[in-house]
Length: 101
Image 1 (cartoon, rainbow, N blue to C red):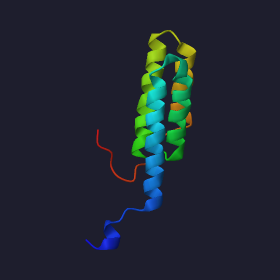
Image 2: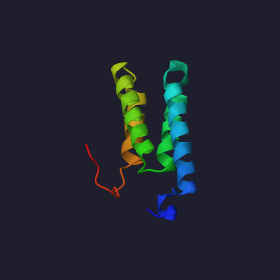
Image 3: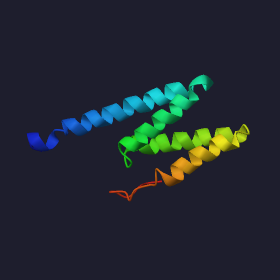
């Protein structure tokens, strides 16, 4: 491998690092019921930053988990708003590479 082909794009690397940091912050917020809204907003920001990134996929799963928890707790309206956001504003983009499930 040549030296240039083995180097990572520094801009993309910093963007990925930023999304990972935001994702970690959202996970920390999620641990505290008082901070759950901060978690939700931070997960949304991660998704909006790069819709087809690994971090965005993880944030979508976290939002879905929160919505399901809200639904079980009887917070139907809160759950609905998260489901709606996932369905309308964060549709899955056509992947550049086939996804593995």
